Amino acid sequence: MYLCRLIMAKLRNILLLAVSVLSVACIDIVDVRKKIDANEIVATVDGVMLTRTELRRDIPAGLVGADSVTFSRMYIDNWVLKQLKMRRAEEVLSSNEADIERLVEGYRQSLIMRQLDQYYIDHAIDLDISEREIVAHYRANGARYKLDHNKVRGVVVKTPRSFRNTSTLSTALRNVVKRGTQEVEALAEKHSLQFSDMTAEWVSYSDFLSHLPTVRTRSYEDLLSKSGVQQMSTDDANFYFIITEVVRRGEVSPLECVADDIRRVLYAERRSAIVGRYEAEMLREAASAGRIIFQDSLLLDAMIAGLPAVASEEVVEQRDSLEEVDERIFEEADSLSLGI
Image 1: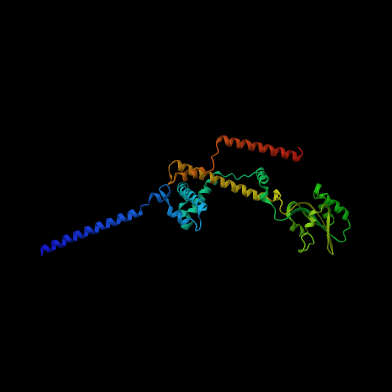
Image 2 (image 1 turned 90 degrees about the vertical axis):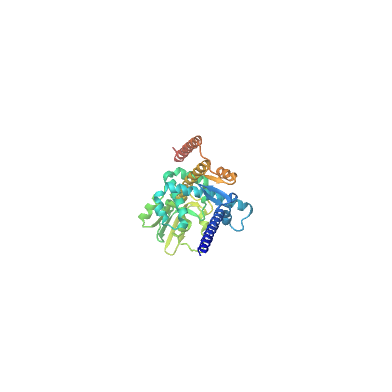
């Protein structure tokens, strides 16, 4: 009996040992499976790896050849930049982390990166956009601001059919081009005439025609080619009008009409430049510190080469000097236009 118990005890120990060995073997197998082949790694940033499997997974179906290579390059560059920005965001935006964590996880990284961009923008943006910058942009990019409709300046005066002082009114309207609208305004006030002044700002031609007895079935394009005082009539009234300036569909819009659009464009360009500079700086710092690792070193070289160049002090001084020259040219042009 004692011998049987001894044999059973030894068998139990052998079984436990076998189970232990098997468990260790299974763990080793799992660990091996978790290891990633070096050839599978595309890039590493701060220990975080991008694998070829992940890259292939996100390449759109049907994308082959040069298009596939271009997409892969952009994907890798964006992935590296995202890792760096997330690490920088943890350093810079730590105080906002609690608020960000409450957001949907799918939008979390995108939100943090936008906030990081805004952090740099808020610390570097110049909100003052001068009139000279607007004019310079307009002169260089006028073709971007072509009109899709006619715009005019002018004056409309409505009189009763009984009004007889038409000669004086016509003379006053002709004088609008050189002398302004004061004469017409005084005459309209004296005789209680309906006076519509559209000389201070450009208006669409359709808005100008709304002050006249027009019909929808006509375009009235022919009126734009006529100079001087023109007239329309109804059963109970006459309408005298003059179109002092015209900008036609397809021509460059007057600066006054697009100044606010240009201001928004220049502000957006400043924001983009600030974000581009800090992203380039961050990528260069990480590359020189060995934080970015590509399996193919040419990818790293290509990414760095594609970054915007950092302006040296000499280049900045030359740029400032050119801006001063532009300022003088603008001032001289203004003086000439004013007859100084």
